Image (cartoon, rainbow, N blue to C red; front, side, top):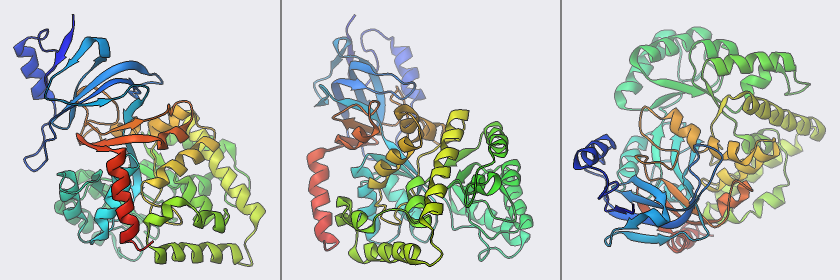
Length: 449
């Protein structure tokens, strides 16, 4: 029997009672959110990201910012009031997430939000809170600003901001009351300060993640409930690999502990290879086309930092290369063991322009030996699981937030195809390639390039 979608599910087949139950189960838009009506992606190949598979020649219906119907194109009729997007020969997948991003305040923040969106980044976990960010989150998440859904860490817990366990506990409660989504851990905390933070976080119900302070160590951080470990540093400090060989026995041990604790890892491979380890041709990086969307003075700052690293008398290219390859070994081992990997780039830093940096990160993850599906899952399905208490997204399925990317080529064959985007949908708002390119052209002028 043919199904007809009129912004409800299975009209003519499903009973009114069942329809009401389905509608009631879908998360509703807030009053401030914009309603972009009904959109239909017709005759498209769907990559649902619930498994390594493709649903060919399907139709996907979006209403009120949610996916409300999916089925074979021959079985779904589209209501006359729907905006139809022809997906013939194209691929529809969930939007990507940047799980270690930075969201500035001020006027340029709106530009950064659009750069994320222009690259199919529909969710960002901001990892360094500052004044103005909670207001930015409210404006972006409501649709006032074109940009990804934001989840924000508060100002960091570090050796300068925290001077005692009592202060750490008080700061946890303050950030919880202020409305931050998680706590950011930076180096410098004593174990007593870290433990006070972790215990209080458990009491009030706020998660925490980031770096592993030296006085704390990876094993203790795992046992205290740190949910994300960003940059892989803790693993290399524990099992070796920074300036020598990896102890694979120790690595296997700590990977199993991480998995058993249901903790997540945010690798940020490109940032570390370029900015910390110091690899890469500066001239080639300065020629990257996406830099035209970024202020030249900041690009000059990135250049100066890279030059200082590479011109340091102690810089050893062979040691730096070995360090970078060891990071790839650790990432592959984590992925093979089934530890949850979350996509993140720490942009904007060191030639990493927000949004564009995701695509460089995927290529780095591929060089580490992860499969295209594993890489894509790190930026979609895994992120949805991490945020499952807040919302439903990360796969193409009924009830999920309508964060979608329409691609011209199959990313399961080559992750570089994820950059071949015909358009992006954020919470039901469709941005065509033409719309995206027009705004990008304006940004070039605005930043003075």
